[in-house]
Image 1 (cartoon, rainbow, N blue to C red):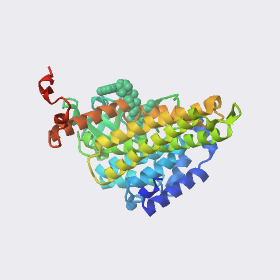
Image 2: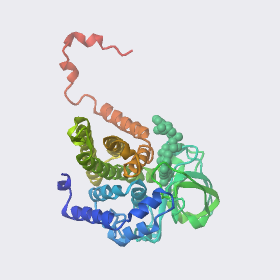
Image 3: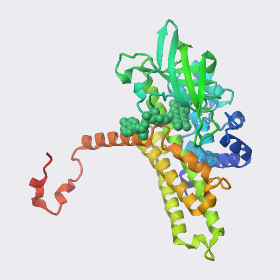
Image 4: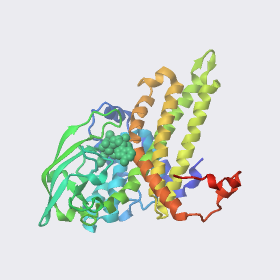
Length: 409
Ligand SMILES: Cc1cc2nc3c(=O)[nH]c(=O)nc-3n(C[C@H](O)[C@H](O)[C@H](O)COP(=O)(O)OP(=O)(O)OC[C@H]3O[C@@H](n4cnc5c(N)ncnc54)[C@H](O)[C@@H]3O)c2cc1C
């Protein structure tokens, strides 16, 4: 239904990723990740890289395909079928890659971006701190510059890839006395530079990515690993938030779709009171509600992809897409479980795993409350800037004499 939005090349990519998801990734790996027997699925990342499926938007010279966001969204919807852990690791290349590609030096692209897209290096991002993730500019991890090196002290937590990544994109305070938006810098920190991993978390879902806490104790990082300007971390952050949120939104489409399909098929076979349960409107209307919401979210995510591709200021729409798609996912997975009754709650079917995965989507890459914060901020600004350019519908109110009743304080 949505294929018409894609170019021939994007449709081919979608098919390619669908085949990869179906034929290459073994169920045993998904099970092992969920059982936390795997700390980082290195082979999965390598097999994506071998097929040049990582970092699709980046130019061919760095190992990408020079495609647009619409292509990446289509690919991510397919990857989402593998669950949140796999989709996250796939997305990290796009997120970290965006920072290096847009604001990194040629040397950084050669040293980090290229080998990442080739599957020779694994990346992660470290923004969140134990003291809080939402208040990004309140970060307290310090980087003191001395000559050509920074010395890092502090902690980051909830870092996916803490166990398996070769390097981390880390946001640090380089000017603690400056106002928050001009106080942070972004550094590429290699594990070998002295990153300690202390605590690997037991998670409800999205397992197998080795999510842990990082410690920096006088970790020495060369100045050439600075991404973007010193104290200009906000530039990198604002740029990174586009892939950060759009990848979450796109992955959510695939996660919702596959659960809904399992529940739909189930409802055509399961019987109660002598009827297949799809005959009960309480069941089939849940399917209807789910598919309508999935299609609505998908429409928004694709429009957002086009918006970003046009080079427009996409902060508001990307935040909306992240919120709407992840809330849709939560509803659709819950509906799917409800349609399946008790067996949906067991691990005889994979819907329970997706339910655990889905819960996270509303929390990470900026909570949905932070999305609301951003959306309202941008919208208030737009409305107030626009003033009364358009028809003043207040004048169309039934009570034309009611002006004097408009009392505001
Ligand atoms: C499994 C997992 C993987 C993750 N992966 C990564 C990763 O790879 N790298 C990384 O850097 N981070 C990662 N995160 C961190 C994630 O992005 C943060 O947890 C998230 O941004 C929220 O930060 P917090 O947990 O510190 O919550 P807090 O910031 O403490 O927020 C707590 C609550 O307060 C609300 N709140 C806070 N401020 C406001 C406000 N101004 N207005 C309204 N409500 C507000 C929040 O919405 C939330 O409900 C991951 C988290 C998890 C759980």
